[in-house]
Image 1 (cartoon, rainbow, N blue to C red):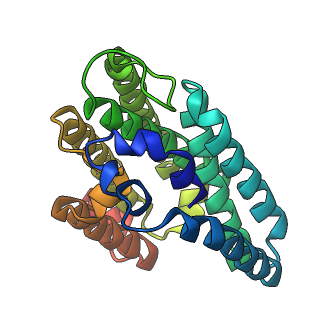
Image 2: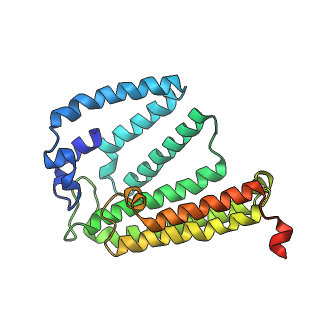
Image 3: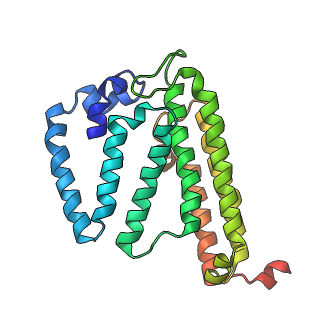
Length: 243
């Protein structure tokens, strides 16, 4: 809510974000001002109960700083956004008793950075001209360069995933680790497809929202789940695959 309240002018000039509740006027601004601190207090209570209050404080500080200043600084904004995504993951791991591994952290770092860049590229594509974009610090002409950064991040994430598949960790945790090699092509296919949709101007929403409505993304997720469960259960042994 704080983010939307601080981005009112920028959202109102955006092709799709102008339909957001605050930007369109469908929801009174006073509601956001009143509810933001209430929701913050609820979050603090829940975090204290789950023993992740330090994570929440860091997350809140990073998010507030991003909304106030960092999102106006080119590149700093996307690195901050990917770091905030990472903090969510780390907090979830701490709350659930499943700490984030170094492999997952490395993979997610490139993945989140790529998605943050994808979001910015989509925003720039929805605007006309090459001038500066309000509350972003980017120019319309930066779109192609940001897309290059994002595609590079996507391939970097796939490389980390490929390295994990042949690591000792994968050998220890999965009875059939060879099945994991199917995850690399799936992840890379999905990321390349998302970038192609962005280049064609179809990415009119946040990438996560877009993927949630995309049937191909759901098929990729289903295939990945099948591979993971098969590798975990030892459905196919290395000798069987070799034969």
